[in-house]
Image (tube, rainbow, N blue to C red):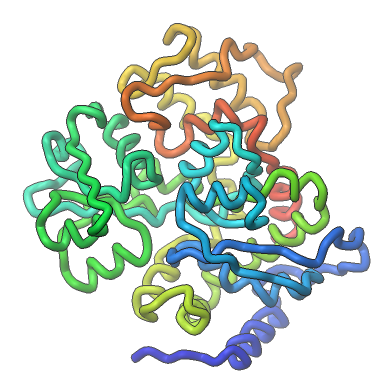
Length: 388
């Protein structure tokens, strides 16, 4: 049965949870520099997996923010564009959307990961693996969207040529989930609430769940992104926003029912059961564990599978050295050239046929832009702070 809490009841429960201490040790704001601004803007999109962003409002107020606005934006690439253009200050977004934006020079800074997983690949009967997608029709929201790039990278990872072996179906008038449910496509990669709705309707079978299936479950999916100019001008505010989001992620694990009710009450989700299922399944608590802090395995996959999906401006023999050199930065947001064993031969990659596709699950392209597009110093500080 669906139960909707009113705002006052929800906030009372949230305050009790904070008082109980399960969101981390209380911080003395008097010991920190004052906020440079008390106004922040976050995106509002139809996606349940970014729930921490939607339940962080009171945590943000506890950090000293007084004007908190949720701005309706498009999802995916549109979301990244809104951050880069200064229409919003922060948003959680799927990392591939952010990598593509960063590669085009967008003014975005990635601050930390919030959870792995959330994508599920549904297929009709008779399709039992990604290899079976060869020659099949696969529905996507659009070419170059996050789901398309992620699934294309998975296909390349298992040896398929995503540009020629898969028939990508795009219908602006019909969502991919509906095409799949009606039998018009053979497979579809979805994120909450789509997987929960399909399972509730008993449509199709799941052949990949990036929340639990390796190697994808070992890498962050949604990350907190910020406008780079905001980060540079408001470092104290940036740290406090990140802290509130990480605490909200912990709340999603500790009180999924409350969070699901808040999403429905706030208009962020339409169906309580789907919201509760999605929040309960996603490992938000892993945001404070060592998930993809040093993606050496990802770099190794890039070296092994590079021919399947991309060419670089240098030879295959020389490319892995450049990737490894960037990996030496440790995703810390800083790049110490003196610490590198091998200097990078190139910082440019060209992807064959399908722009932006990277071979290792989700994150190989990130190695080429890590020094420019991320700042994980605050995330590292808060991981230690919130574990105490």
